Image 1 (cartoon, rainbow over the protein chains, first blue to last red):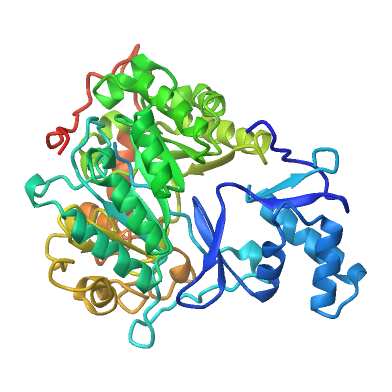
Image 2 (tube, rainbow over the protein chains, first blue to last red):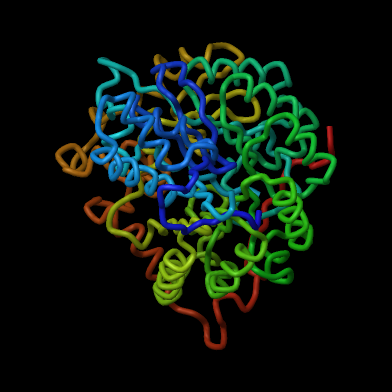
Length: 104
Length: 401
């Protein structure tokens, strides 16, 4: 597990990926997307789910923002900081790995 | 093993704007909350003899353990009820030869599967079979940073095997939680314990101060830390948390004997967690069977859904309506839920009293006397200088079935 870049700043070419310990599934009770990890669970609302579903190690941060902006008919500029903040909270919890441009 | 595994609250205030939270429910009559976590105590058999064992002080007969099919049915019912996490615990769950089959059943039921283990018996073959069955996460208990102290606490040679097992767990890419129960004998080793957790590659470190009920209560004189020890430990843990941020999640669980407010035990009775013990009793917390007058129902007679929603035991201390003063009018009542019912029963004789760990409890002096008695060390003694005063736990036979 030496390939985990933990504390990289989020730049437009960074590719976020859910940490190996986290997985998502649909919650039977609420129908929401549940993000499961060793110490707990987050039930995501549609916006959170849309962000997390793009954390696949394929999409760059820039691509995520563009995709979300199209889906929510918003401008990428206005969404960018909200998405970055959300991703940062996931990273703080160890739920997200950030793959830098150089690594990919 | 076993210390009580900690299931952190599923309420995540930091994500309030982008996650949906279930609102706490105060009145069971209007709506019963859903459980998020199941503690499955698969067996009380265990190779260790820890003096702070949190399993019940009296064991049910080993031969009456739930069968594979009964556990599979329980896991399936848990998934249908909304449970998202299962802690496969014990005793030592590896002593169940059907463990991989139960992991697979839990995954099929939609549960995130956590193995809570001493790691004794975790061979490569076993670990690979658990991986193949879908096991998500492993927690290994350690007793100290080095073998002589660790083995004298566990009451059996085990430290070296735990280290090997931790390496194996990381080799197989399981997320690893390193758990250590802290007390008078090992608090002085905290710095080295943290270093060991780093060395074995743990993603998470649980520094859990001993909770004094059950077997630990019998050993309280030997295990209660001094204030000086705790102040030093808190300083070390806080520094480690900062230093290791982003690398290893450090969780320091405060000893409630030294706090002002009680712990929010199980995040509220019958609110988020459910325990099923080895012989099928369904409990609001793993030590609830110590409340002798309360009737608990069994998964062999009733469904998990019925027991959770309708049974007397789960509704007895659910919400806030049961609370006496000072809890009833306290602005913390939806935060700590009056603390721990088992501790109230143990120290005051009535599970319905405010937990004496609260400084507002009329029974606080019971706890203070115990704490005051722990501050003096006989001349020449350091807290960890000997372990001859420990009463070890004698567990049911740990032969494989």
